[in-house]
Amino acid sequence: MTPETAAAFKQLHGASLKAGALDTKTKELIALAIGVSRLCGDCTVHHTKAAKAAGVTLPELHEALDVCTLMGGGPATVYGKKALEAYGT
View (spheres, rainbow, N blue to C red):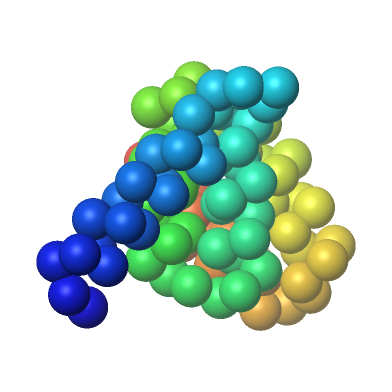
């Protein structure tokens, strides 16, 4: 990736997760759920840590991962475990 593309992606990342109608905590949970559903380990870890920093509690994380399991089946449980490890459980 070129530096120009990296900078543009970083700008998109910040703009997308900035609080608006949805707070950053909610947006990070959405990003985490997509990371788990897309089976992206790095995305899962990154957005779990960002969600925790945004104030997501462990019970909230568990419930979000329950929805991931509903929608993603067995593979989502593997990436859900990665999220729990990244959260620090």
